[in-house]
Amino acid sequence: MALKRAVIYCRCSTEEESQADALKNQVLESEACIREQGWVLVDRYVELKSGTTTKGRAQYNRLFDDLTADRFDIIVIKSQDRLMRNVKDWYLFLDRMLSHGKRLFMYIERKFYTADDALITGIKAILAEEYSRELSKKINNAHRHRQIEGGKAMLTSRVFGFLKERDGSLKVEEEERQIIRKIYEYSAAGYGSRAIANIFLNQGYVKRTGSTLTATSVGRIIRNPLYKGVMIMNRFHYDFETKQTIKVPKEQWIYKEGAVPAIVDAELWERANQAMTDRGDHVRRKGAGLKGDSTGKYHLSGKLVCGQCGKPYYRTWRRGCADKERFVIEWKCSGYLEKGRKDKRRGDSVRKAAKEFDGGCNSVHLEENTVFELLEQVSGRYWDFKAQDKDSIINHALRILKKALGDTPVRQQWEWVEKEERRLESQKDFLLTKFLEGVISDKDYRKRNDVLEQELAGIRKQKDELIRREWEMRNLEQRIEIIKKRLENGGMEKAAVNHMLKDIREIRVHEWQMEIRFDSMKMMELSSDNTDEDYGISEFLDYPFGPETERGRYLDRRRIVEKLKGEPGTTARKLAGEMGRSVYMVRNRMEELIKGGYIRFQGRGGHGVWEVLKELPCKEESIRAGGL
Image (cartoon, rainbow, N blue to C red; front, top):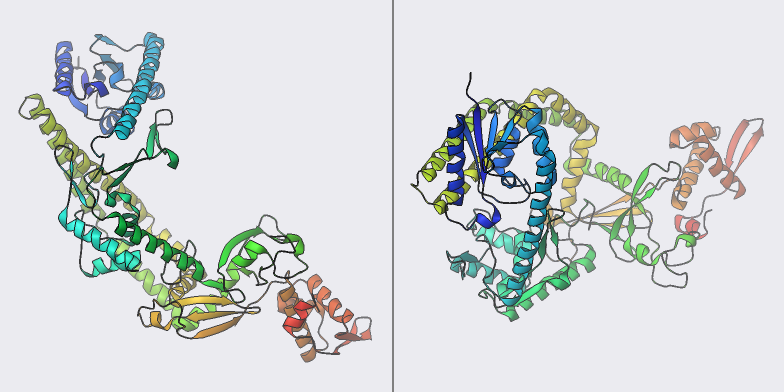
């Protein structure tokens, strides 16, 4: 008869974590139990992390996954609360264990779990969870009192500018102190976060973590009161019920002055922050930031500016007129969105403010798709590529992509990752053996084991990435074909437009046209920080207003008149095909022209010709008149 294969799962409870050798004794007791029962020890799952749930417990999660494999027959634990103090997780574990023919032995009680124990173990799980809930409340309450009454600053060793000593105290890192002071001085002198980050990047400065200072990290440093010696505590709270860390309302935050050594004085901190706030206000007044490449959430953010009031355009959406399921993305002047139209119009029923309110804007609305179509026309001339160039560019890009994806040595990397995983697991087993033999202390074991766990987590992440890449390799041809279709169906043009937008200072929206203002300094890859001075050249584009707008209807009427001058015998059906409009819509426009006395039909029974009687009024006069 084959010997039963057993594994042990050991974990210290929260109240045992401070006890010396608690985990070591638990492992020794579990192994002694296996020897007494005559089973064979095949693996150890030794957890250093306590907790009521399974989140973040690597060894438990490994055990849970191994339940589905044929690696062992019996799991030995000290008691039920060693696995978890959460009722839901307890029953999930039992369900998987029993469905795969495994057994659970609790050596404190010297018995196996059986179906008859379902009720009593469920009650125990509920009691254990309630105990953990009360313990969590006590810990949170004690932690809050320590924050209010004082104590050591609770910071990690990765906070920029500070080093954490063995006793938990903090000291200022001298080199980083100099960098932080310079950041505040640059900000107070008028430099933006991106400019400051570029200064240190050009100097080759690298943080102790190996990363460079980014504009985001510079902004956070400037806004952080920690650097003037003020620590903000109680910003987050762990909720036992939801098992999530939640944000505490700002009015409940705890501010403690002098909690850490001040790196800059309060006066410099205030000047740097006020300068940063003033720069933000200036950028917003100028139109959502015209200096940087990333001026907003969307590609057109900060680029579209009203030609009448000078305010920026904002992105909005509405449902289609005919098709209510279709969404139309529109950009509208913020002056209109805030105060409605400047004067009385037919659309007064949808004004954003009372009719007597002064100061609105009459600027036009722009459809996002139409704007990009116009920009695509400009980008073709801007980058100077022709239709035949497009095919060669796409084919060249696909050849590079095939080579890059096809030459990836996934198999060689997979072998190395598996070998490295086996090496680290072997080191963990060796480390555990030395710990059990008393060669190394509990503290040293925990420290080294944490390092190995982090390395293993990184290796397993690489392994998952290789699995994904191997799957992608199998679908390479399909992916290449999808990419090719995207490039052929407008992907290349969109990329060209997005890149061209970096060289566009602003797109000024006039009554009938868009004025694209290029920044010649950026086109020459030079800096242009003076937003008050005009640079470069402008290109004007007629905007093709839709037929549902007043301007669109006017443009349609003008096109009809021009067509009738050249082809007096044409029909409404033919005009509709050439204009891309419905026959019904063209006939309506022609009836409007007849009523206005601009055209008439000479003939009978549908046979005859059209005669243009007079010219249409100018665009602005027509719109002011509310139509014709």
